[in-house]
Image (tube, rainbow over all chains, first blue to last red; front, top):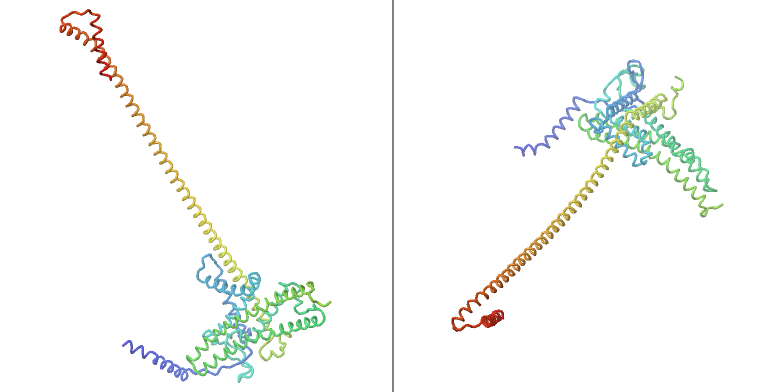
Length: 304
Length: 176
Protein backbone atom coordinates (compact mmCIF):
# COMPACT_ATOMS: atom_id res chain seq x y z
CA UNK A 1 0.00 0.00 0.00
CA UNK A 2 2.65 2.62 0.88
CA UNK A 3 4.41 2.00 -2.43
CA UNK A 4 1.18 2.69 -4.30
CA UNK A 5 0.74 5.92 -2.32
CA UNK A 6 4.32 6.94 -3.03
CA UNK A 7 3.84 6.38 -6.74
CA UNK A 8 0.58 8.28 -6.75
CA UNK A 9 1.84 11.22 -4.74
CA UNK A 10 3.30 13.19 -7.63
CA UNK A 11 0.34 12.83 -10.07
CA UNK A 12 -2.07 13.61 -7.24
CA UNK A 13 -0.14 16.78 -6.44
CA UNK A 14 -0.25 17.89 -10.06
CA UNK A 15 -4.00 17.23 -10.27
CA UNK A 16 -4.52 19.13 -7.01
CA UNK A 17 -2.55 22.13 -8.25
CA UNK A 18 -4.38 22.18 -11.58
CA UNK A 19 -7.70 21.99 -9.75
CA UNK A 20 -6.62 24.79 -7.46
CA UNK A 21 -5.72 26.96 -10.44
CA UNK A 22 -9.00 26.20 -12.18
CA UNK A 23 -11.05 26.91 -9.06
CA UNK A 24 -9.07 30.07 -8.43
CA UNK A 25 -9.55 31.40 -11.93
CA UNK A 26 -13.27 30.53 -12.00
CA UNK A 27 -14.31 31.62 -8.52
CA UNK A 28 -11.70 34.22 -7.52
CA UNK A 29 -10.79 36.14 -10.67
CA UNK A 30 -8.54 39.11 -9.92
CA UNK A 31 -8.88 42.44 -11.64
CA UNK A 32 -6.23 43.60 -14.03
CA UNK A 33 -3.85 45.64 -11.89
CA UNK A 34 -4.05 49.37 -12.17
CA UNK A 35 -0.54 50.47 -13.06
CA UNK A 36 0.29 54.05 -12.16
CA UNK A 37 3.73 55.59 -11.78
CA UNK A 38 2.95 58.36 -9.24
CA UNK A 39 1.94 57.18 -5.79
CA UNK A 40 -1.74 57.34 -4.92
CA UNK A 41 -2.66 59.91 -2.31
CA UNK A 42 -4.84 58.87 0.60
CA UNK A 43 -6.52 60.63 3.48
CA UNK A 44 -4.78 59.65 6.65
CA UNK A 45 -6.99 60.29 9.73
CA UNK A 46 -9.67 61.57 7.33
CA UNK A 47 -8.01 64.88 6.50
CA UNK A 48 -4.24 64.48 6.14
CA UNK A 49 -3.51 63.89 2.45
CA UNK A 50 -0.33 61.84 2.01
CA UNK A 51 1.01 59.55 -0.71
CA UNK A 52 0.61 55.88 0.22
CA UNK A 53 4.35 55.39 -0.39
CA UNK A 54 4.94 57.92 2.38
CA UNK A 55 2.81 55.94 4.82
CA UNK A 56 4.71 52.82 3.76
CA UNK A 57 8.03 54.55 4.47
CA UNK A 58 6.73 55.52 7.91
CA UNK A 59 5.70 51.93 8.57
CA UNK A 60 9.17 50.76 7.56
CA UNK A 61 10.74 53.33 9.88
CA UNK A 62 8.53 52.28 12.76
CA UNK A 63 9.34 48.60 12.20
CA UNK A 64 13.08 49.25 12.02
CA UNK A 65 13.17 51.59 14.99
CA UNK A 66 11.02 49.39 17.22
CA UNK A 67 13.02 46.26 16.32
CA UNK A 68 16.32 48.03 16.94
CA UNK A 69 15.14 49.58 20.16
CA UNK A 70 13.75 46.31 21.47
CA UNK A 71 16.87 44.42 20.41
CA UNK A 72 19.37 46.85 21.94
CA UNK A 73 17.38 47.95 24.99
CA UNK A 74 18.76 45.52 27.56
CA UNK A 75 21.94 44.30 25.98
CA UNK A 76 23.82 41.60 27.85
CA UNK A 77 27.12 39.85 27.29
CA UNK A 78 25.25 36.67 26.53
CA UNK A 79 22.74 37.66 23.85
CA UNK A 80 19.22 36.28 23.83
CA UNK A 81 16.22 36.57 21.53
CA UNK A 82 15.97 39.79 19.60
CA UNK A 83 19.47 40.88 20.63
CA UNK A 84 20.81 37.90 18.65
CA UNK A 85 18.98 39.04 15.53
CA UNK A 86 20.11 42.64 15.86
CA UNK A 87 23.72 41.69 16.57
CA UNK A 88 23.74 39.18 13.73
CA UNK A 89 22.50 41.79 11.27
CA UNK A 90 24.91 44.45 12.42
CA UNK A 91 27.85 42.04 12.43
CA UNK A 92 27.00 41.03 8.87
CA UNK A 93 26.81 44.64 7.70
CA UNK A 94 29.93 45.69 9.63
CA UNK A 95 31.87 42.82 8.08
CA UNK A 96 30.89 43.85 4.56
CA UNK A 97 31.53 47.56 5.14
CA UNK A 98 34.89 47.04 6.83
CA UNK A 99 35.97 44.62 4.11
CA UNK A 100 35.46 47.36 1.52
CA UNK A 101 36.32 50.55 3.40
CA UNK A 102 38.80 49.29 5.99
CA UNK A 103 38.22 49.20 9.75
CA UNK A 104 38.52 52.95 10.49
CA UNK A 105 36.50 54.40 7.61
CA UNK A 106 34.17 51.41 7.74
CA UNK A 107 33.08 52.38 11.25
CA UNK A 108 32.45 55.97 10.12
CA UNK A 109 30.48 54.94 7.03
CA UNK A 110 28.54 52.15 8.73
CA UNK A 111 25.46 54.12 9.85
CA UNK A 112 24.85 55.62 6.40
CA UNK A 113 25.45 52.42 4.44
CA UNK A 114 23.64 50.24 6.95
CA UNK A 115 20.60 52.51 7.03
CA UNK A 116 20.44 52.55 3.22
CA UNK A 117 20.49 48.76 3.22
CA UNK A 118 17.96 48.22 6.00
CA UNK A 119 15.55 50.95 4.83
CA UNK A 120 15.52 49.75 1.21
CA UNK A 121 15.38 46.07 2.21
CA UNK A 122 12.40 46.48 4.53
CA UNK A 123 10.66 48.71 1.97
CA UNK A 124 11.10 46.06 -0.71
CA UNK A 125 10.16 43.06 1.40
CA UNK A 126 7.20 44.70 3.13
CA UNK A 127 5.64 45.23 -0.32
CA UNK A 128 5.68 41.44 -0.73
CA UNK A 129 3.79 40.75 2.50
CA UNK A 130 0.38 39.20 1.98
CA UNK A 131 -2.34 41.77 2.52
CA UNK A 132 0.09 44.69 2.45
CA UNK A 133 -1.62 46.32 -0.54
CA UNK A 134 -5.12 45.26 0.37
CA UNK A 135 -5.68 47.63 3.30
CA UNK A 136 -7.83 50.25 1.66
CA UNK A 137 -8.51 53.79 2.74
CA UNK A 138 -10.34 56.72 1.21
CA UNK A 139 -8.46 58.99 -1.12
CA UNK A 140 -9.12 61.28 -4.07
CA UNK A 141 -9.57 59.22 -7.23
CA UNK A 142 -6.51 59.45 -9.49
CA UNK A 143 -6.81 61.57 -12.61
CA UNK A 144 -7.96 59.71 -15.71
CA UNK A 145 -10.16 57.33 -13.75
CA UNK A 146 -13.88 57.11 -14.46
CA UNK A 147 -14.52 58.58 -11.04
CA UNK A 148 -11.89 61.30 -11.37
CA UNK A 149 -12.40 64.09 -8.86
CA UNK A 150 -14.43 61.85 -6.55
CA UNK A 151 -13.48 59.75 -3.56
CA UNK A 152 -12.23 56.21 -4.00
CA UNK A 153 -10.85 53.43 -1.83
CA UNK A 154 -7.09 53.20 -2.37
CA UNK A 155 -4.33 51.04 -0.81
CA UNK A 156 -3.02 52.52 2.44
CA UNK A 157 0.48 51.16 1.75
CA UNK A 158 2.49 50.89 -1.43
CA UNK A 159 6.15 49.84 -1.19
CA UNK A 160 8.07 53.10 -0.80
CA UNK A 161 10.65 52.12 -3.39
CA UNK A 162 7.97 52.08 -6.08
CA UNK A 163 7.89 55.85 -5.81
CA UNK A 164 10.58 57.88 -7.58
CA UNK A 165 10.42 60.44 -4.77
CA UNK A 166 11.87 57.88 -2.38
CA UNK A 167 14.56 56.50 -4.67
CA UNK A 168 15.56 59.94 -5.96
CA UNK A 169 15.68 61.21 -2.38
CA UNK A 170 17.93 58.31 -1.41
CA UNK A 171 20.14 58.95 -4.45
CA UNK A 172 20.45 62.63 -3.50
CA UNK A 173 21.43 61.68 0.06
CA UNK A 174 23.91 59.15 -1.33
CA UNK A 175 25.63 61.60 -3.71
CA UNK A 176 25.72 64.40 -1.14
CA UNK A 177 27.09 62.00 1.47
CA UNK A 178 29.87 61.00 -0.93
CA UNK A 179 30.86 64.68 -1.22
CA UNK A 180 30.60 65.14 2.57
CA UNK A 181 32.85 62.18 3.33
CA UNK A 182 35.22 63.22 0.55
CA UNK A 183 35.78 66.53 2.32
CA UNK A 184 35.87 64.85 5.71
CA UNK A 185 38.53 62.32 4.72
CA UNK A 186 40.62 64.50 2.37
CA UNK A 187 39.93 68.05 3.50
CA UNK A 188 39.89 70.78 0.88
CA UNK A 189 42.13 68.76 -1.41
CA UNK A 190 38.99 66.77 -2.25
CA UNK A 191 38.11 69.68 -4.56
CA UNK A 192 41.01 68.61 -6.80
CA UNK A 193 38.81 65.75 -7.90
CA UNK A 194 36.68 68.24 -9.85
CA UNK A 195 39.09 71.18 -10.33
CA UNK A 196 42.46 69.74 -11.18
CA UNK A 197 44.91 72.23 -12.72
CA UNK A 198 48.06 70.27 -12.00
CA UNK A 199 50.40 69.03 -14.71
CA UNK A 200 51.96 70.86 -17.62
CA UNK A 201 50.83 71.51 -21.17
CA UNK A 202 48.59 68.83 -22.58
CA UNK A 203 48.55 66.95 -19.25
CA UNK A 204 46.89 69.93 -17.58
CA UNK A 205 44.19 69.93 -20.25
CA UNK A 206 43.57 66.23 -19.63
CA UNK A 207 43.35 66.79 -15.88
CA UNK A 208 40.82 69.60 -16.28
CA UNK A 209 38.73 67.45 -18.62
CA UNK A 210 38.84 64.52 -16.22
CA UNK A 211 37.56 66.88 -13.51
CA UNK A 212 34.60 67.80 -15.73
CA UNK A 213 33.91 64.11 -16.36
CA UNK A 214 33.87 63.53 -12.60
CA UNK A 215 31.21 66.22 -12.21
CA UNK A 216 29.10 64.66 -14.96
CA UNK A 217 29.45 61.18 -13.46
CA UNK A 218 28.35 62.49 -10.05
CA UNK A 219 25.26 64.02 -11.67
CA UNK A 220 24.60 60.79 -13.55
CA UNK A 221 24.52 58.93 -10.25
CA UNK A 222 21.30 60.76 -9.28
CA UNK A 223 19.68 59.06 -12.27
CA UNK A 224 21.39 55.67 -12.16
CA UNK A 225 20.94 55.03 -8.43
CA UNK A 226 17.32 56.19 -8.32
CA UNK A 227 16.07 54.55 -11.51
CA UNK A 228 17.82 51.24 -10.92
CA UNK A 229 16.08 50.82 -7.57
CA UNK A 230 12.75 52.28 -8.66
CA UNK A 231 12.65 50.29 -11.93
CA UNK A 232 13.45 46.97 -10.32
CA UNK A 233 10.96 47.23 -7.50
CA UNK A 234 8.17 48.88 -9.46
CA UNK A 235 8.52 46.32 -12.26
CA UNK A 236 8.49 43.56 -9.66
CA UNK A 237 5.21 44.75 -8.20
CA UNK A 238 3.65 45.02 -11.66
CA UNK A 239 4.95 41.57 -12.56
CA UNK A 240 3.39 40.03 -9.45
CA UNK A 241 0.07 41.81 -10.18
CA UNK A 242 -0.04 40.68 -13.80
CA UNK A 243 0.86 37.05 -13.04
CA UNK A 244 -1.76 36.95 -10.28
CA UNK A 245 -4.29 38.33 -12.75
CA UNK A 246 -3.46 35.66 -15.33
CA UNK A 247 -3.40 32.69 -12.93
CA UNK A 248 -4.88 33.35 -9.52
CA UNK A 249 -3.13 30.69 -7.44
CA UNK A 250 0.28 28.97 -7.35
CA UNK A 251 1.83 30.38 -10.55
CA UNK A 252 2.90 33.58 -8.80
CA UNK A 253 4.96 31.74 -6.17
CA UNK A 254 8.23 31.46 -8.16
CA UNK A 255 7.94 35.15 -8.94
CA UNK A 256 7.54 35.89 -5.25
CA UNK A 257 10.77 34.02 -4.63
CA UNK A 258 12.36 36.05 -7.41
CA UNK A 259 11.12 39.32 -5.93
CA UNK A 260 12.41 38.40 -2.47
CA UNK A 261 15.80 37.91 -4.06
CA UNK A 262 15.55 41.11 -6.15
CA UNK A 263 14.53 43.11 -3.08
CA UNK A 264 17.61 41.90 -1.18
CA UNK A 265 19.86 42.38 -4.19
CA UNK A 266 18.72 45.95 -4.88
CA UNK A 267 19.13 46.95 -1.24
CA UNK A 268 22.63 45.46 -1.27
CA UNK A 269 23.50 47.10 -4.60
CA UNK A 270 22.37 50.56 -3.50
CA UNK A 271 24.20 50.38 -0.17
CA UNK A 272 27.41 48.90 -1.57
CA UNK A 273 27.50 51.31 -4.52
CA UNK A 274 27.20 54.24 -2.13
CA UNK A 275 30.01 52.76 -0.04
CA UNK A 276 32.27 52.10 -3.02
CA UNK A 277 31.66 55.55 -4.57
CA UNK A 278 32.55 57.13 -1.23
CA UNK A 279 35.65 55.02 -0.72
CA UNK A 280 36.87 55.67 -4.27
CA UNK A 281 36.18 59.40 -4.02
CA UNK A 282 38.13 59.59 -0.77
CA UNK A 283 41.01 57.31 -1.74
CA UNK A 284 41.60 57.48 -5.48
CA UNK A 285 42.22 61.18 -5.43
CA UNK A 286 44.60 61.01 -2.49
CA UNK A 287 46.62 58.40 -4.30
CA UNK A 288 46.63 60.26 -7.60
CA UNK A 289 47.68 63.49 -5.83
CA UNK A 290 50.49 61.53 -4.25
CA UNK A 291 51.49 60.23 -7.65
CA UNK A 292 51.50 63.78 -9.07
CA UNK A 293 53.57 64.93 -6.11
CA UNK A 294 56.08 62.15 -6.70
CA UNK A 295 56.27 62.90 -10.42
CA UNK A 296 56.80 66.65 -9.89
CA UNK A 297 59.47 66.34 -7.23
CA UNK A 298 61.11 63.17 -8.45
CA UNK A 299 61.92 65.06 -11.67
CA UNK A 300 62.25 61.93 -13.78
CA UNK A 301 61.89 62.89 -17.47
CA UNK A 302 59.52 65.73 -16.60
CA UNK A 303 59.67 68.60 -19.15
CA UNK A 304 60.36 72.01 -17.60
CA UNK B 1 2.40 76.33 -0.65
CA UNK B 2 3.96 78.09 -3.71
CA UNK B 3 7.30 76.33 -4.07
CA UNK B 4 5.99 73.01 -2.88
CA UNK B 5 3.60 72.78 -5.83
CA UNK B 6 6.40 73.51 -8.29
CA UNK B 7 6.24 70.95 -11.10
CA UNK B 8 9.58 69.15 -11.33
CA UNK B 9 10.71 69.05 -14.99
CA UNK B 10 10.99 65.64 -16.69
CA UNK B 11 10.50 63.80 -13.39
CA UNK B 12 7.13 65.47 -12.72
CA UNK B 13 4.97 63.16 -14.84
CA UNK B 14 6.62 60.18 -13.18
CA UNK B 15 5.37 61.31 -9.81
CA UNK B 16 8.29 63.32 -8.49
CA UNK B 17 7.20 66.36 -6.52
CA UNK B 18 9.02 68.54 -4.04
CA UNK B 19 6.98 67.66 -0.92
CA UNK B 20 7.30 63.94 -1.61
CA UNK B 21 11.01 64.22 -2.34
CA UNK B 22 11.76 66.34 0.72
CA UNK B 23 9.50 64.16 2.84
CA UNK B 24 11.35 60.98 1.87
CA UNK B 25 14.75 62.61 2.39
CA UNK B 26 13.62 63.75 5.83
CA UNK B 27 12.29 60.24 6.52
CA UNK B 28 15.65 58.76 5.68
CA UNK B 29 17.61 61.29 7.71
CA UNK B 30 15.37 60.73 10.75
CA UNK B 31 15.82 56.99 10.38
CA UNK B 32 19.59 57.46 10.03
CA UNK B 33 19.70 59.58 13.18
CA UNK B 34 17.48 57.29 15.28
CA UNK B 35 19.16 54.06 14.15
CA UNK B 36 22.54 55.57 14.97
CA UNK B 37 21.27 56.05 18.53
CA UNK B 38 19.34 52.82 19.09
CA UNK B 39 21.09 50.40 16.72
CA UNK B 40 24.63 51.09 15.56
CA UNK B 41 26.08 52.71 18.65
CA UNK B 42 24.87 50.25 21.32
CA UNK B 43 25.32 47.14 19.19
CA UNK B 44 28.82 48.06 18.05
CA UNK B 45 29.71 48.92 21.62
CA UNK B 46 28.46 45.53 22.74
CA UNK B 47 30.27 43.70 19.95
CA UNK B 48 33.54 45.49 20.72
CA UNK B 49 33.09 44.91 24.43
CA UNK B 50 32.47 41.23 23.84
CA UNK B 51 35.41 40.77 21.51
CA UNK B 52 37.61 42.58 24.04
CA UNK B 53 36.32 40.28 26.77
CA UNK B 54 36.96 37.22 24.63
CA UNK B 55 40.46 38.38 23.69
CA UNK B 56 41.14 39.03 27.37
CA UNK B 57 39.83 35.58 28.28
CA UNK B 58 41.95 33.89 25.65
CA UNK B 59 45.03 35.76 26.80
CA UNK B 60 44.29 34.86 30.40
CA UNK B 61 43.87 31.20 29.50
CA UNK B 62 47.16 31.37 27.61
CA UNK B 63 48.87 32.88 30.60
CA UNK B 64 47.36 30.28 32.94
CA UNK B 65 48.50 27.51 30.64
CA UNK B 66 52.04 28.87 30.54
CA UNK B 67 52.00 29.19 34.33
CA UNK B 68 50.77 25.60 34.68
CA UNK B 69 53.50 24.34 32.39
CA UNK B 70 56.09 26.30 34.33
CA UNK B 71 54.83 24.90 37.63
CA UNK B 72 54.77 21.40 36.23
CA UNK B 73 58.37 21.76 35.11
CA UNK B 74 59.35 23.21 38.45
CA UNK B 75 57.60 20.34 40.24
CA UNK B 76 59.34 17.79 38.08
CA UNK B 77 62.70 19.46 38.64
CA UNK B 78 62.08 19.39 42.39
CA UNK B 79 61.03 15.77 42.27
CA UNK B 80 64.17 14.92 40.34
CA UNK B 81 66.28 16.79 42.86
CA UNK B 82 64.55 15.00 45.74
CA UNK B 83 65.13 11.66 44.08
CA UNK B 84 68.79 12.44 43.65
CA UNK B 85 69.03 13.60 47.26
CA UNK B 86 67.36 10.37 48.45
CA UNK B 87 69.75 8.30 46.42
CA UNK B 88 72.68 10.25 47.81
CA UNK B 89 71.49 9.78 51.40
CA UNK B 90 70.94 6.08 50.85
CA UNK B 91 74.35 5.68 49.29
CA UNK B 92 75.97 7.58 52.11
CA UNK B 93 74.14 5.51 54.70
CA UNK B 94 75.23 2.34 53.00
CA UNK B 95 78.81 3.55 52.93
CA UNK B 96 78.63 4.46 56.60
CA UNK B 97 77.13 1.11 57.50
CA UNK B 98 79.81 -0.70 55.47
CA UNK B 99 82.51 1.25 57.24
CA UNK B 100 80.96 0.64 60.65
CA UNK B 101 80.69 -3.05 59.96
CA UNK B 102 84.27 -3.23 58.80
CA UNK B 103 85.41 -1.33 61.87
CA UNK B 104 83.41 -3.57 64.17
CA UNK B 105 84.82 -6.66 62.52
CA UNK B 106 88.33 -5.31 62.77
CA UNK B 107 87.85 -4.42 66.41
CA UNK B 108 86.40 -7.84 67.20
CA UNK B 109 89.24 -9.51 65.39
CA UNK B 110 91.81 -7.47 67.30
CA UNK B 111 90.09 -8.14 70.61
CA UNK B 112 90.00 -11.82 69.91
CA UNK B 113 93.63 -11.76 69.01
CA UNK B 114 94.41 -9.89 72.22
CA UNK B 115 92.50 -12.44 74.23
CA UNK B 116 94.31 -15.19 72.44
CA UNK B 117 97.64 -13.52 72.99
CA UNK B 118 96.98 -13.03 76.65
CA UNK B 119 95.78 -16.59 77.03
CA UNK B 120 98.87 -17.87 75.32
CA UNK B 121 101.08 -15.78 77.57
CA UNK B 122 99.30 -17.06 80.65
CA UNK B 123 99.58 -20.63 79.47
CA UNK B 124 103.26 -20.14 78.79
CA UNK B 125 103.81 -18.66 82.22
CA UNK B 126 101.84 -21.45 83.88
CA UNK B 127 103.83 -23.97 81.95
CA UNK B 128 107.14 -22.40 82.99
CA UNK B 129 106.03 -22.25 86.60
CA UNK B 130 104.90 -25.85 86.44
CA UNK B 131 108.15 -26.87 84.78
CA UNK B 132 110.18 -25.09 87.47
CA UNK B 133 108.16 -26.71 90.24
CA UNK B 134 108.35 -30.05 88.54
CA UNK B 135 112.09 -29.73 88.15
CA UNK B 136 112.53 -29.23 91.93
CA UNK B 137 110.32 -32.15 92.80
CA UNK B 138 111.73 -34.39 90.06
CA UNK B 139 115.30 -33.65 91.31
CA UNK B 140 114.42 -34.62 94.83
CA UNK B 141 112.67 -37.77 93.65
CA UNK B 142 115.52 -38.56 91.33
CA UNK B 143 118.09 -38.15 94.09
CA UNK B 144 116.13 -40.36 96.39
CA UNK B 145 115.58 -42.86 93.63
CA UNK B 146 119.20 -42.76 92.49
CA UNK B 147 120.58 -43.08 96.01
CA UNK B 148 118.39 -46.13 96.46
CA UNK B 149 119.49 -47.57 93.07
CA UNK B 150 123.18 -46.90 93.41
CA UNK B 151 123.19 -47.73 97.11
CA UNK B 152 125.88 -45.41 97.65
CA UNK B 153 125.81 -42.00 99.03
CA UNK B 154 127.08 -39.33 96.96
CA UNK B 155 127.78 -36.06 98.41
CA UNK B 156 125.00 -33.66 97.96
CA UNK B 157 127.08 -31.42 95.77
CA UNK B 158 127.99 -33.98 93.14
CA UNK B 159 124.49 -35.24 93.27
CA UNK B 160 122.88 -31.97 92.40
CA UNK B 161 125.35 -31.47 89.56
CA UNK B 162 124.42 -34.70 87.93
CA UNK B 163 120.75 -33.96 88.22
CA UNK B 164 121.18 -30.52 86.71
CA UNK B 165 122.99 -32.01 83.81
CA UNK B 166 120.25 -34.53 83.25
CA UNK B 167 117.55 -31.90 83.47
CA UNK B 168 119.30 -29.44 81.18
CA UNK B 169 119.64 -32.24 78.68
CA UNK B 170 116.01 -32.99 79.18
CA UNK B 171 115.18 -29.29 78.62
CA UNK B 172 117.27 -29.31 75.52
CA UNK B 173 115.53 -32.36 74.29
CA UNK B 174 112.20 -30.91 74.94
CA UNK B 175 112.69 -27.51 73.34
CA UNK B 176 114.70 -28.53 70.40
